[in-house]
Image (cartoon, rainbow over all chains, first blue to last red; front, side, top):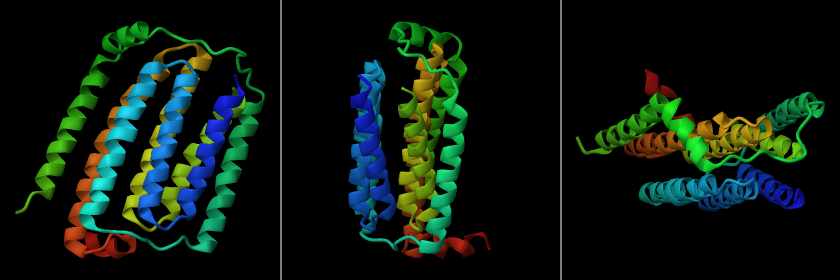
Amino acid sequence: MNGIPLFFIIISLLISYYIIFSRKIIYSVLSLFLIFIFIGILYLLMGSAFLFISQILIYAGGIIVLIIFAIYTVGIKETEGINLKEGFIAFVLNFLIFFLIAKILKDYPFPKKIISFKMDFVFDKLLKDYLIAFEIVGLLIVISIIGTFLSVKEK
Amino acid sequence: MKIIYILSILLFLNGILIILLKRSFIYILIGIELSLSSLSFILFLTSRILGNPDGEIYAIIIFGISAAGVAIGLGILINLMKEKGTQEIEEFKDLGK
């Protein structure tokens, strides 16, 4: 059971390194699409079909299409590569933080088997305890769409 | 289980790395989306490990926030392209003047 999620997360990591070193924007966006699909499959393997569907619909279906639409609207193809000196420092810091977190988590007792919940239990909690946060997120999406529309509109 | 958790933290850090290293606005958006997506996966895994459904609720809320974020980001991108004709962030240093 543990091998298949490991495969997907390692492939996602390799693709994320490809995004860092790539210069062609459209290939990076398509790689991001693959990462979103793989994270969705990880949700499914961990036992949450709802989050799998949400991930595919929102990230892979909505956000990627929006980004590709924007790329073709403004007509950009290539960008500059990364600065090697900055990149070296950033990579060293990245791995330093990663090893620090890994060292902290090394002794934490992880359970052998993951605990799954029924989705109706989660939504019951969402609509009782987190109702205001949920409403605020809905309001945030509406405000962002209206704000984007108003700012892009011809003056 | 532990190694998947730790590697998903590395995926989040790679998203931050994309934001820091790339000079292009689209890549910054890509980095933000990658970090938010892996962050919601980390929260989901945490909720599964601790046996508490709060993490899953946070993951659902982060989905909404990232959708709002990309809408605002693309609006900013189209405005910047209209204003300056480029999307390299080095060119936008004088916007605050």
